[in-house]
Amino acid sequence: MKIPTQKLRSNYSIPVLGLGTWQLLGKECERAVRKALEMGYRHIDTAEIYDNQTEIGKAIQGFDRSELFITSKVWETNLRFKSVLKACESTLKELNTSYLDLYLIHWPNPSVLLEETFRAMKILHEDGKVRSIGVSNFGLPLLKQALEVEEIPVCVDQVEFHPYLYQKELLEFCKKHDIVFVAYSPLARGKILDDKTIKELADKYGKSPAQISLRWILQKGAITIPKASSEEHLKENMDVFDWKLSKRDVSKIDSIKIQKKGS
Ligand SMILES: NC(=O)c1ccc[n+]([C@@H]2O[C@H](COP(=O)([O-])OP(=O)(O)OC[C@H]3O[C@@H](n4cnc5c(N)ncnc54)[C@H](OP(=O)(O)O)[C@@H]3O)[C@@H](O)[C@H]2O)c1
Image (tube, rainbow, N blue to C red; front, side, top):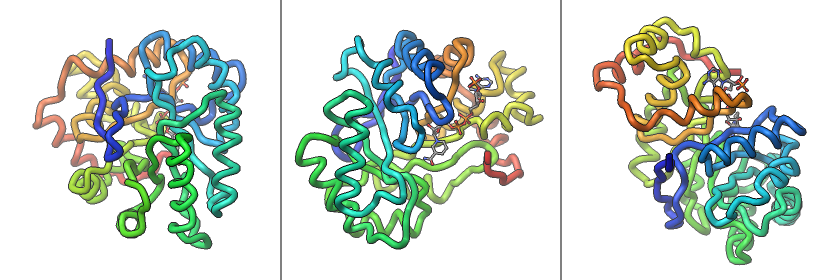
């Protein structure tokens, strides 16, 4: 099954479902990423801080690089001009690839001007090392600021988003400004799986609670990157494209009252 894509402001396309790899380490990481790619995943989300880029680099060998979409993120202590360039070089080396599809500022750092980080990202873009750029964990005020000072298009904001953390205002802003909204921790790190409403809907649709949460996110127009290590979870999370939640059931999930981060 081919995973649908969304167009980025850079004109490249991003698969709407990717594999999150935070906490996937060593051989387990290599095995899960390879398995995911064999199943048809094409989008892999990592970061310099995840300490798994070398394993991902091994797992992607043998797959056509031009068909893959690899995201990495520069850590908050590496946002000065020279540090961004250096961090990106080691990420590319670890991943054993010549370019990243998407490079994100992992977390904002108020002690470094955004302009400085963006200047470095522009150089990386001009050198062909980074195709698209974006931010992560940027709330509305910071995202607005990023758009004011961007040197090349900020294409993505990656933030925590799931039925327990419905960031509606930020999502609407992103849609309006053509920024792709990437939902991380889409299963609230497992907490959503025991939710009563989600479980009821899972029974109704003959799907799993994880699939209900992922489907809700996709129907919101967001894209998502669930982390999974078992073959069963990897497979289940991909099976969210040939069925739909009704409008009424989407609203039911919208009105789940708990506002709780996955962490
Ligand atoms: N930008 C940021 O600051 C940031 C922060 C956090 C996360 N992220 C990204 O977002 C990705 C996903 O978020 P996350 O790892 O925090 O949490 P998550 O994807 O919400 O949840 C992962 C957990 O759910 C389980 N799971 C996966 N599929 C399942 C299924 N079908 N049924 C039941 N359980 C299932 C996984 O178990 P198994 O592993 O056993 O399959 C794992 O324990 C991360 O890996 C990372 O790439 C980014």
